[in-house]
Amino acid sequence: MPVNKVARFVYLVRMSISKRLIPALAAVVLAACSSQPPYQGMGAADLYDLALRQYQAGEYQDAIRALDRLFVAYGGWEQMSEARLLMGHAYFAKEEYLTAQSEYQRFVDRYPAHPEASNAALGICRSLSALSPNPHRDQTYTEEAITVCRNVVLDYAGTPASLEAGGIANAMRLKLAEKEYLNADFYFRREMYDSAIKYFEFVVDLYPETEWAPRALLGIYRANTAIGYDDLADDARRRLVQDYPDSVEAQSVRTDESGS
Image 1 (spheres, one colour):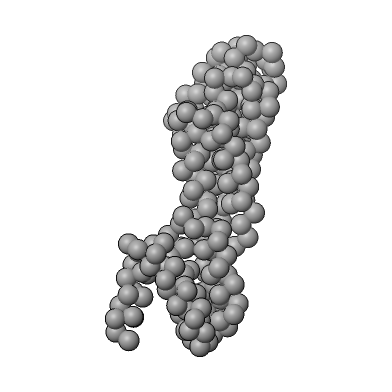
Image 2: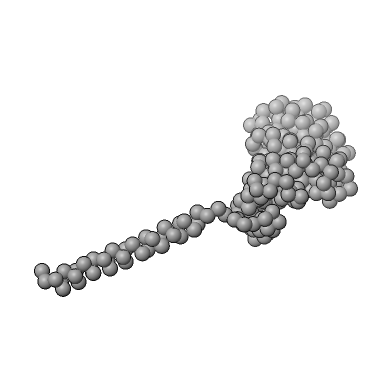
């Protein structure tokens, strides 16, 4: 092969290799840049401000990462309490309620006299109520939420947190009452009236202030009527009309009585 053709061949090979290597080298450079420690050069206030902006933008996981960096690098920062509370809010917004509960509890334990302690306690109440399942499932979290929320009502009386916690506790009691009522109705529909009456009585005795109590009394009335225990049926009817006179259920037994 002539010398000039050999030289041209070598040149073309080098150019081809260069075109393949340049993108690869660029990728290596970018990877090296991206492997630099995140938040490099940021102080505690900068990290908190970044996390707060990310939280407000709905970028909850990014906010959590920034806060984690803050906790590791600046454990003695004077505004660490605000950062801890924000961490609880971020996990709650991510619907990671168990972790949120832990973060709120950590805040309450570390900063019991802090002005935001009531909101952190409310965060625990909210987290447990969010973990409360539908009435057909185990209600352990529901019962725990009632206890915690009632403590918030007592410990922070007169605050907005106390008012909200009271509402959540009431909602959780409604769920427990509904669960007992559904148990009773399960047996009633299968004509297992003695078991149905037992669960209906649980509702009336334990949750008399709920909307499920008059429904349960109506269930007791109808179950005893089906069995033939007319005296017990009459007792349930009288109690229903007396204790819940404006309820739909009281109206229904009045109708039954007038039609009989």
